[in-house]
Length: 393
Image (cartoon, rainbow, N blue to C red; front, side, top):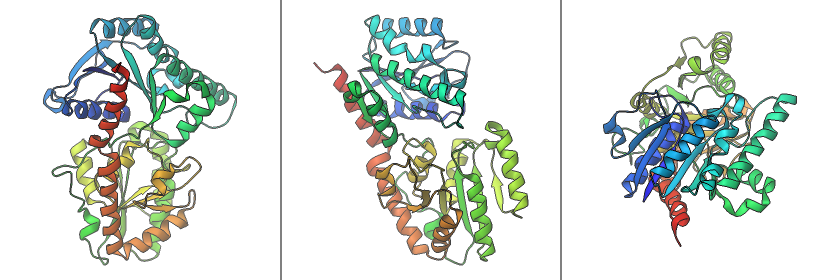
């Protein structure tokens, strides 16, 4: 079966959806599929040996109407069996206004092109209230409707997105499937090892907390700093490593976080890595004793960073919330705390700091949960099952 995976950005560009597309392409190749990545022109691709047998086609320079017409012509001419379209509104247009890209599945259907399986990584955006936001949210729902109309199936990663899509478009509910995202950074060496720093370290040694991301506003880095301050006030030797290019992606927020760090007297207790390669991310994740997944609306299965923490077998302290995926919070594979309440997270981490056996238990559960539900082997099998259903008689 020939499969085309469409994504505007690919590594080495720092983009979680691009990393997802690259990992999915390799995973489907391992299952015997012939896979091509279709992307923008003018960007350097990942080294050929890293992509293995995956072909890379750089087809369009822009993602407006002319670009989508050219892309549809290319996909039809190449006789792909199925097209996987990776969609995030903000990736294809300023403010997420991406009507041409949202119409791509309809365009392919009108031209008798291949069946389209769209993964909508984000239906709505997290923006402050206001008239502009109200307009944008309506537009995002319109774009989701266009994707549903043109696509044979639509994949969403979270329970909340699944509910929203089914309630907004009940006529197309049968087209909607929920499959979580995978880890954007995999462990170096043996993937099966769950022996992180937390599993080896005695209670008297310094504890390293970790976060991973580029500073999205729903990740509560402020709470992580407050928690760190509280733990150090308890007399615990704790440090925090913030992995990811926050300064380059969200410079204003990064400066505010650094100011808060100084105000709390945490200078020297926090490491900000900036942009680093995947192997260095993996090395740092392996050194983390407790991973902090503090989000203002609760953790969900659309976070590739959270999946990377599971992949590395880390003990995870994560927030509940109105948008949280219950199958994650109820899994027993992580420690769940109240959202927007640093004291709750501090109490959980303080207990883990004094109990290496509990950290080891959480590490084992984390990795076991990943292997069964979140590994690329497991996810690609589910996606391939959906893909094959589109071509079966």
